[in-house]
Amino acid sequence: MACHSTKKLSDEVIEQQAHTAKQNGEWLQAAQLFETIYQRNPTNEQANYEAGTHYLKANQLQKGLMILKEFDRQDENKAADFNGRIARLAKAYNKTGQYAAVQDLVDQYDYPKMYRGLAREHLKALIQLQEREALAHAFSQYQQSGIYDDKGKATNLGFLYRAICNELLLVGNQDLLAEYAAAYTSWATERLPKDKRNWAIATFYQQRYSTAISPLQEAIAQEDTPRHQLELIGLLGICYAKEKKLTLAHCQLLKINSFPALPLRHDAFGALFYHQARIELALGQSATAIQSLQKALTHKAEFWSNRFVEDGLLKDLFGQDGFERLVKGH
Image (tube, rainbow, N blue to C red; front, side, top):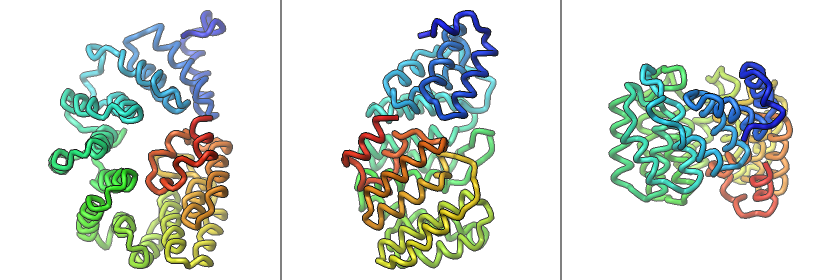
């Protein structure tokens, strides 16, 4: 509901306040401010998107879902090439366990470019529903049609392969994970030597950690994007931990700690403490990993805590009191 203190403020002032709250990681305040803008103009699709998104970030999942659902489809921008708000609605459905509803969104999506976030949420929902054949069919369709990022630029299929492998790891379907990790590796191998990052990550998801070490080292040496390099170093640290090469695993932690400041991107796992937590968990240091995740939040990284439960590499923390408090408390 609109706050009393905002009733006399212009939309421009409220929007400025909302973006400031967003930049400061004050998700609930940002959500409420964007909701005020949306309430004043229910045809404002961007305000609806922002309000719903930030309620999800604030761990108010049902509230975020409700706002995203109530937007009238007649007011969608049909002149656009794609629609990211629908992808956010799909995430809200997945977050609340309404997986079948995601398929309906995809069936009704009538934009010329398939937004990659919606494709990802679709495949995740099919995995949760254990729809193996539908998963294969949908993935094949995305291979043919292509997927696009938030700038409308075509994105390679590594984005979807990584999402599939992570979700299968999350649900514990090792047989299907082995199948898709092998397919991912074959696809990535064809892209060598230009793209070693996907090859290394694909090898990692095959869970033969001793075999993944060399591809990860090669990819790190080639990678010139800091946030991708950081992700690869984190995966290498996990491999060393799994192989009981503890000194080498700790060396990766030191490398992460010495990294320069990075864009604080949640979607690319761009926060230093997040990768640190993944390695610490692989080392069996659950309490320390939880502390690192807390640091990722308190250092104003662009994280929301319920994002942590979407990461299959953090699965061993699920159910632990400290982790559950962390997720529910933000």
